[in-house]
Length: 87
Image (cartoon, rainbow, N blue to C red):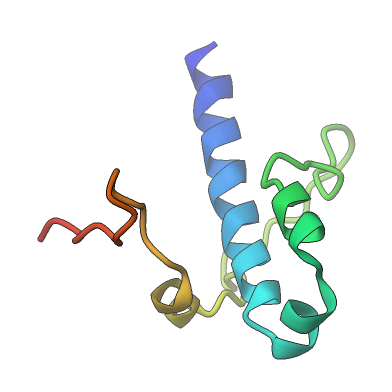
């Protein structure tokens, strides 16, 4: 059971990075309405093949631009101001 929780957490993390990469593109950011953005969720798994053969490319990585993280706002404090990330 714990392995399934770890797998789900890893999948949500990768999905979150993919969503952030798409939303960093101004074309998509302007196209989505507020309702569309509220409906986004990293809990999708249609791109996962749970059965069959898996081709793992151990010499390549997902092309995720990690600089996108800097454009995503941090958590909010009760007063509505952005929280300072711990160092």
